[in-house]
Image 1 (cartoon, rainbow, N blue to C red):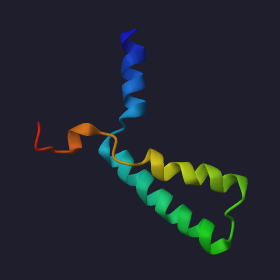
Image 2: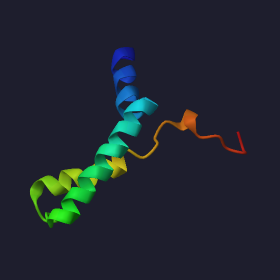
Image 3: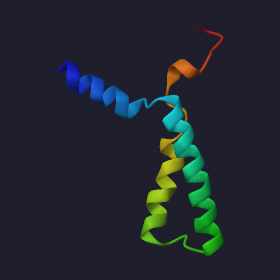
Length: 67
């Protein structure tokens, strides 16, 4: 059970370096999709999901005033 929880946590909260790589990849891929006019290509829908997944999910990187 603990191994499954650790794996799930790593998938949901990737390290910062991976978030940065995915953000750069998604930016380049989105530019390519829109420049080439591939907005309705099936691969474009996968690329559309990357920006949402590469948003900073690691809560320890965010400093909040409340705590």
